[in-house]
Image 1 (cartoon, rainbow, N blue to C red):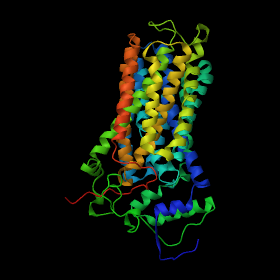
Image 2: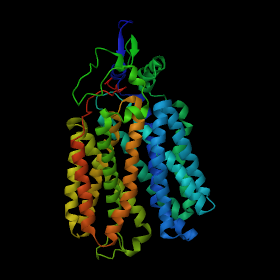
Image 3: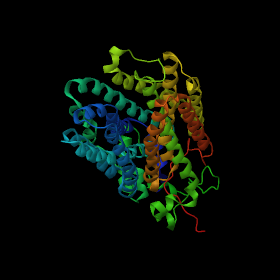
Image 4: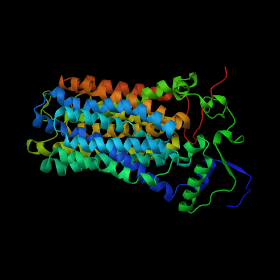
Length: 481
């Protein structure tokens, strides 16, 4: 495209010109592979506990600790990698995250004893805690138009990972044992490392750091591969382009502000500034509530499907299917998330992020209503699978709504801290959900999840702004007063 060589254009205008094509598709595959690796490493926890317990004669508490330490490591990693990503770049953070996850994951397959396994799985958890970086990295290459739909497609890789891990467990565990299973599960993370040299740095991060020439080179490569032509002129950071984002006082757009001397404020100082306190609290609650509800429904499915239920004669599996039912359960319930993703992809750019999440949370609550009393196999299965579909889809929308909310200079840190609250929800849930169901309190367990889901939906309603169709923001400027 011809133009004035002295004209200026912003990164958002450049991404719009470049469009979504082969370049972003390759990035989608690379970032998606990172998510496949995370899903597989987390799904390990669903399969190895009993095998390790039998081999090393562990108590139930020591068996549970194998999962707990992973989440503990993820709590640390979620914050740590967010800081590293915002300071040193998305690409360097991806290198660190993938290295630790892959190496610690593989080494844990050779653990000589229980203590070494616990330590290595905790270290792997630190790496897994930074996998949210892949979301922010890919998000920053996607044009504003239809960003929600493409981020939903990106989230499909999580489901691919869970399905692949269930299939791998089904094939490997009965024949070769848990060590081979863990070793092979680290494969995607090693592939991410092998392809690391081909991954570009986020041009939005580069622009924010003043490295516009590097960002321009990446955009030219993207345009060439997509068969488009980058406009001529001078690339400038969005917040420096006067005609693009005049400061508005509306709570829906207050983050769209220009650079000032305070733009260099420390990450935590900006993140916990008065402008973001309300946003932080609501996003933290969103992540906690989403994770608590999601893992609660997964555990509820397992508990209500158990042959060993002491509270009801209703079972979902016959005795002769007991050996393979775990693999089948994980495989089928993972597939149950597909309709939720399709539904969210269809509505997220039409009605907005907030309303999409609220609608899906309400649908999940309604689908849980029949389970306030014991139901037959068909109703129980349909209710739980449907509720899981919508809760998981809501979590997907939250995963790209949050990086859209935070400006580039604190995006990964903000997402990392929110993600940490999600890990807390995942850790707390089993203590409550399993305890209630095992004590024959299914009704109270279902009510707890319904209240949590509705409270989280209410929190979304009060979120300060909608990001649908809005350009990503680079810097939050703090007022002088």
